[in-house]
Image (cartoon, rainbow, N blue to C red; front, side, top):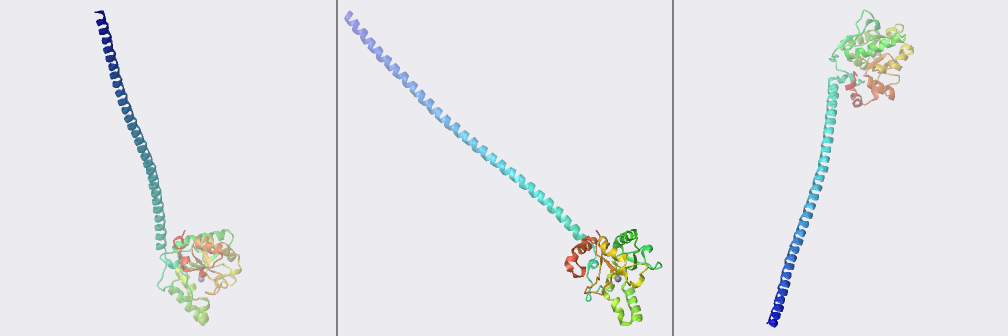
Length: 296
Ligand SMILES: [Zn+2]
């Protein structure tokens, strides 16, 4: 009995042992599977996370690029807007200048030479009278282009303030007045009248923007006018009021007339004075660029 039970016990133990090993092996394989699954999960989770992160980074890069692009586009739009505003400003200035040029009578800056005369029907748009304190014959009315009047008045008043006696012996002359004057000269002086009453000087008087200055002492013959202080003052200051000497000594357009001054506007008169240029030698196209500023 004892032997049998011993064997039975041993056998039982062996079975237990086998069972226990088997159980152990079984548990181990469970754990290993779990581990593998976990590892697999971790791996896929990590991959997903990495993919999500790189996607986020890509999105972020795209967004920031879009931002940069948008900021650039905004800047470009703002610049275009500024350009547009500048263009509009420039255009409206150009329109203003053009309107002034169109509104200004181009004859007022035209050159009248031995071959180009002013039309006999031409008359200034508006005339105004020169104050008698500055005229030669007090009973006569002396007229000048209305837009030129204030420049001439300033010139005469400033000369007076300097103690000078500058007066006007001739100003606007109509075609018929000039024709009468010329035939009067002809009666008295014959064909020699052309020498001191020719067409181009007449044209400038018909414009209403030319005046013949003198002094009470020199009078209407103008003899020796270029020796007076009044003439010296004119050569120094007339351009400040927009007046120029039409026929200076040595010009090829007409006889020397130190008394005959024509209004061409301050801008052009100053340019001619500063550059020591002569009106009749300038290109008419250059002269015409001053038309818009004639009465500035
Ligand atoms: Zn004259």
